[in-house]
Amino acid sequence: AVAQSWLDLLGAQGGEVQSAGLQPLLDGGREVGRQERVVELAPQEATIASSAPALCISLGLYAKGLELLKRQAAPDPWLLTQCLLKAGDRREGAEMALALARAARQRMQKSGGISVAAAMELNNAGYVLADASVNLEEAKGLLEIATEALPLDANCIDSLGWVYYRLGEMKKATFYLERAVRLQVGPRQPDLYYHLGAAYAAQGRPARARSMLRTALSLDPHHPDAQQAAEQF
Image 1 (tube, rainbow, N blue to C red):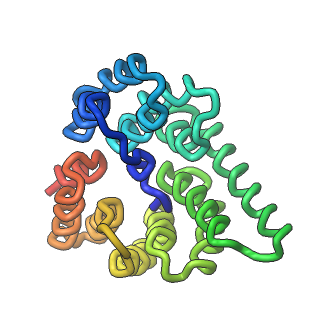
Image 2: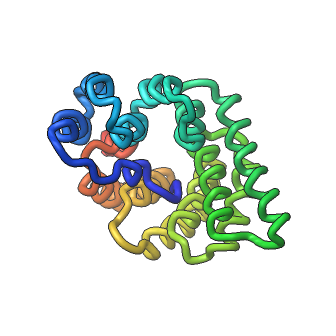
Image 3: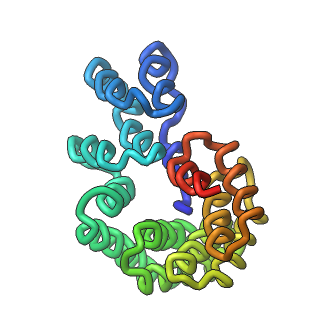
């Protein structure tokens, strides 16, 4: 999983603008157009303006997220990378992810070691590549470095399991994805349960797959990938 959930980017933003603009998206994503209206009416609300793409990504609306990011003077590189990979130019998205990873590794070389921040950047790069099923061997290499540096981090372990899933190595995928679920700290993450459910489904273990997908949807009823996977059961 990406080390920082896109929804973590929302922050606390009170007032009528938030209740009018953000809540409809969180309630199902049927009124995404209203977010643009909110941003237009309240350009001074920087949190809301910057949060709109993250909200779209959380709902699987990658084309809309990409459209909103391209309007920003300095879009978040990780959000832009994910949107490009999922809904736009996969080649450009892959190049951007690898460039961000190279920058992190260069900082590691200069400092003589790997920091938590650098490990998380490698994790993020590897995860977005794996999630889009591009440059999988390079993604695996990045995630192996991240996981070696942070062997108890649930997000890194989940990412490594997910790249093995994309590579079709289900035994390894399940090993890491089960470990990631066990090592969660704080609020449970729906992506981790979705990934494990997908791996169980690929192994022909429908009961376990169904259980994990139900858990993912109980945590995020609008999780687009979990919804689609659950339709098989």
